[in-house]
Amino acid sequence: MSSPAGLPEVRVVRYVTPLREGGSLPGLVEGDDLGTYVCKFRGAGQGPRVLVAEVIVAGLARLLEVPTPDQVVLDVDPRIARYEADEEVQDLIDASPGANLGIDFLPGSFGYDPQPGADRAAHRSLAGRILWLDAFTANVDRSWRNPNLLLWGGTLQAIDHGASLYFHHSWPGRPGDPARFAAQPYDTSEHVLREAAEAAREQDDELAARLDDDALAGVLAAVPDTWLEPVPEADTPADLRERYRRFLAARRDGVDGVRPWLPTGGEG
Image (cartoon, rainbow, N blue to C red):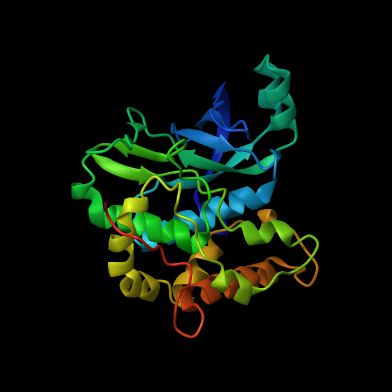
């Protein structure tokens, strides 16, 4: 079954355990399709905008051939909280009825080793695409301390995109300026893949070309309407999608044909 937004829709049948690596307290759940998912709850922390960022950036990643786990819309019935002893988890589930984000759990995966010599040469092109994606979406959460990269089946997977697209957190108060986002540089000083800056620049034109307006519209169509909360001057999900499109298109097009956010530096 698919939701109107295009993501598959799965009903949660069991809450398995909390995952306490991050501040938003995602949980491992089982779905009625027999799948196991990392559930990110819309009632957590910064609310549904984090889920919106997750879906948008994962969609962009696929366009750029950056592997990232599959996503679904998880239908959560608060009654599953009755069997959970942790009151914090109970409160989170109670605050998140209906549509939440499910990210495919990757069994047997392990964290990317950012130490020198960790097979970076073999991943140079992919590392460049990941760095380009993070710079494009202003992702501040792929550092040496928290790489948010998994190795699974021999493939590097980019995960946890919710810290991207910072501009939408200002929308409840002001609409913001796409031109400002287009000109905002990207700080790679703590990025785990900063040495791939040259590979990112080499692929710049090709990657930007993949994100034409039709491609952006397709990515934005995957965001469920229920997570696109009305803000001043954008009252409907269609209005919100158009606002996201303007910001992303401005970032893609840059300033006077130059993308000021493009990573600088080179492999060391």
